[in-house]
Length: 151
Image (tube, rainbow, N blue to C red; front, top):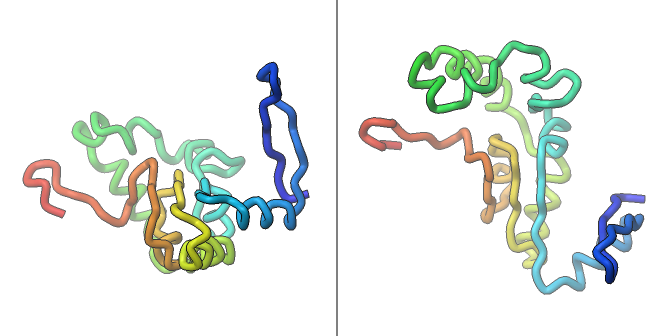
């Protein structure tokens, strides 16, 4: 079993269905449009720390989410944000994409996958070769000045 999916029946109840790897491949192959939704699991395999897992950045207490990532916290005191940047993003700078990142990029190049929608802030999808990436939390590798808006 590769993944569980939820489908809605006539009355709206959700039924869980096991899908094999070959069944998943067939669904992607026969789809007119396909997107991939990714989150922390795809990048933790490359060494990117997650936020909410057992050893996640929020769980360990080292980074207060509001002080570190909320704009109000940043404007009051940018030090927590810059500490996070130094500690975590220094680790990510040299990481390589995983097999899954590369596989998704190959699906896109073949015309099977239209886009990747990710919760991750790392650039591993782009490093793997994906061109159409929507980062729902933004990307950490481009930023702009709050005053002049320069990149």
